[in-house]
Image (cartoon, rainbow over all chains, first blue to last red; front, side, top):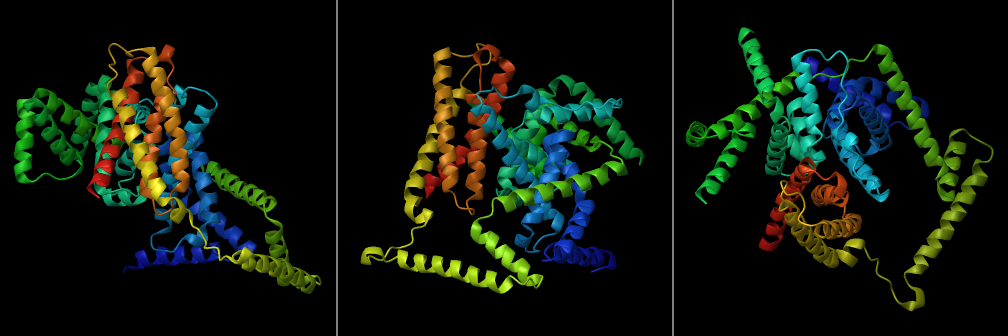
Length: 210
Length: 264
């Protein structure tokens, strides 16, 4: 094990010990450090899952509180962020289910805007960013599980077996969900097929130049 | 029939090409499919392009000040959560907590509180140990799984079967001619709502180990909700497609679950 690998692991262990400490003061400062350490990565994941800033912020903060209050259940078999990561995906799926139930109970129709919304950023000028926005919008047409799987695979570069473990399903199911998500996206983005292909060839050129 | 079989084979190869790896033989067959059918080639091209396009994914850029606020807000959120939890504490937990705090801080009330806590605990232990033998008949502790497992298993099977039937019906709605009849849709909606209620009951009976089943139920619930929430006035081809996409996903999983149950 290299020094670079050893130090973060050691630091993480110390942080974990302080998070599990019985003294309130120690815990509080550890919690702050815990949030500061992982907030950017967790927010990025939450942003991909929810597709908008407000929900991403809410989900990430919720996960931090949940993680802290159940920190004693963390057995150290995985990295702290992997554990947070799993918790975020499952909290997102629960959140979606609960909100959908709530809409039903209130006799509302599914909020199309909520399901199909995307945040269009004013500085989104380049073609690539626009395509990214379209993919984000189209992702809303996938089921939350398909979306989660797609996001984990494509934006967070997770291996299929890691995704399977996070969701508690088999590798085969992950492949099927990914495939379905990709098909849904393809259909949703059929209007932009030409742009997609242009972007693709641009990317290929760029990578060839590098 | 041949076309359909071709399509199934092509889809399996396409899935492998995108998210797995093809053997040399499979690669040759897949290439042949792409050469012979321009639709397949176009589909594969777009799907592959989509994969590359995700590399351009960007996130909103946040300032350092934003991240400071984020940390502060998360801390406040934790405080609120803990305050709410304390309010919900039962008298026994409150007593335990105050005893612990008094002992930690060497409070003068500590011995009194400790005695009070022992009394309360003793009272409950006495009641609990006597409860099992009331009327002289030993009462076996009954777990939820022991009590309802068989019934839950049947309920689950029934739920899957009914959902399967309903979602098959949804898949048969033609997007061109919209809905066969409003009555059909209404009854499908009613069935969906009834099934959603069943899903909630089933979920409550699952043990934490049954997370896979929980996920399956979640998938079905999404599909059912799409059906239950339809309004005839706003139903269009896009909405039907969205509903069918969810139903299709759920149907695949139900089928494999039902197949698994039959094989057992």
